[in-house]
Image (tube, rainbow, N blue to C red):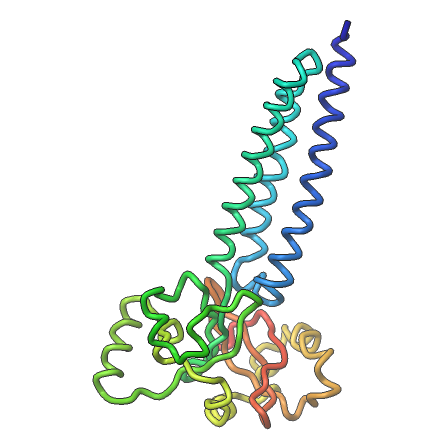
Length: 258
């Protein structure tokens, strides 16, 4: 005979085991999301952290709670295995759907666009337009965003069409036919960048944040060669720091420098 106490204890134990397994899976998913799809600073700029926390909160809580509700040692082994299998499949489906959504929303390119950097996400790029990109850019990267730039317009018609598309919500950076290698815009990036000292003057209360962002890069990139360029994210504005000799992007800080 099973007492109420022993039945409750077995349910809690089963739910705790399920919770532990769910946390292990969540840690593996976190490694994929934050080390591959949304490396720093994109986990913040592109909302990756918030999306993942929502996904984990639903998935990690759902499975163990369902196990706590249905686990009953008085059931036959066949019925209990069936119930737990259904719960596991539901949880896996929820996790797979969440990860699929995060993959579609992942940042794929950091594009220099005329006078700013813009983070372009997979969902921003019209699939039917990818074939118009240069051959090397026709597949969106899975291992974090790559650096690109927007080329000059070929003629007035292309300028008009691209600008009208931008007015309708398709940023120049998300139009594959305009993509080019980042280094081709090196001179323009350096030209539009502004001195690091100017940013500190504009935001005296954020000097500590600026210095912290640059701390690991200062040995190889002295402060006197650092410039800054505004950066547009999904719903926020940041600042990118560049080496004004090479146009290399060296760091980021969450400051709207427009």
